[in-house]
Image (cartoon, rainbow, N blue to C red):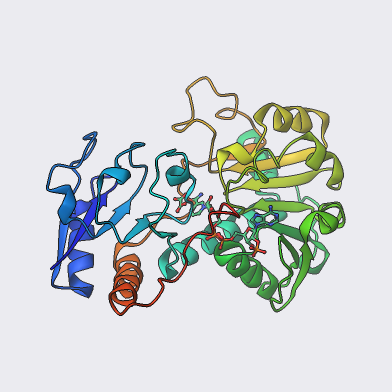
Length: 315
Ligand code: NDP
Ligand code: OXD
């Protein structure tokens, strides 16, 4: 018998249990009660954990754990645990629902800024009928920080729309229609061309604060910033200053250093900022359960699971 511990901060355990059992009917799913500090059942019986933001120190109390599956693509919620078991593979979420949702969101926000929708919204509020300047898609330079599972797919789809797309990653990439810039040496040239900059990096010690004054100064004047990575990628005060000076024209922010975004955040009412509540993409239970079950089967056949986090790289 195989037993999986499931923990989410949303009330969707029934949906997840059904999805997991659809793909592996003999899987026993133990649900960690919503908002409880600890799981309830026999910890030695747990083979796998599928979790989002487990409290620090709990995973190490599961003595027979074979893998830790993150419910999301980001794994920073796990690596904040100083007692995270060192000998158990941590698997990030790679599934087509999450990828498709992120690509939709990034395409939507890039087009929103490219087609000056914030300006048209302001004109609508003021009752103004005025045609603003139009930039052809091939003259609009979009830059994606992070060309992994999510950034790579979004970049490819944006290129299919005819936009002039480039991406930046640690290692060079070959994606149809997408110019590749890599490593520290490639960053400056990449930023210099990015009129719309999208952050889809994982949060690591190297990427924390990357959306700050130094980066903004290297973008073309009047650039737009879309942050869908993590709130800690952004230096909030630097963005407000760059918006004030006109170096940055506008921004879309989906993730924040403090979530929910505090009621007194200036972002809520800023006319040049679009705010969404960390919903750029959401793991889809059916397709995600399929990916998790496929990895469980691999482990049970004695094979290495796919999409294991490299602890040295931090993602
Ligand atoms: P991946 O691990 O597949 O991709 C990460 C990319 O970032 C890779 O291209 C990697 O380069 C690049 N990268 C990492 N560190 C550096 C660095 N120091 N310098 C240059 N490039 C770097 O991650 P995903 O695409 O699956 O997810 C990305 C992030 O998106 C998640 O970590 C999460 O924070 C965020 N996310 C946000 C969601 C939301 O709703 N807002 C939903 C889901 C995810 P290389 O390819 O060379 O290794
Ligand atoms: C994720 C997220 O990492 O939801 O999947 O942010």
